[in-house]
Image 1 (cartoon, rainbow, N blue to C red):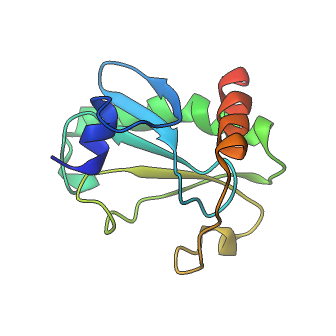
Image 2 (cartoon, rainbow, N blue to C red; image 1 turned 30 degrees about the vertical axis):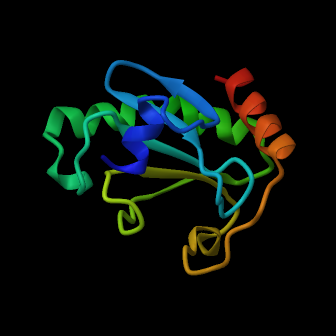
Length: 129
């Protein structure tokens, strides 16, 4: 069972942003920037492109209002998306507030946020959903 499946099951605490019957969104606790959110299918699949077409398209539809809420919550040009998929063997979409393409550079060091900063980011995004 992946760490993301454990988060979805509630076995590991998370800063949940949104959930439905198929998907779960939560803050990345090792973010590139404040507001960096992960969207995962509840079904454990390693590769994003192994998801069935309707499931894959539904993931983007689920992510859309979250991306819009991120854009309202943080000073950014837009919400960028990335599918890297190497760090956890469970398909996931990164939603990141960005001002330039370099803001999606995953080889950069991650930032460390306090629990209070994470709770505040969670609150902002949820209020803007």
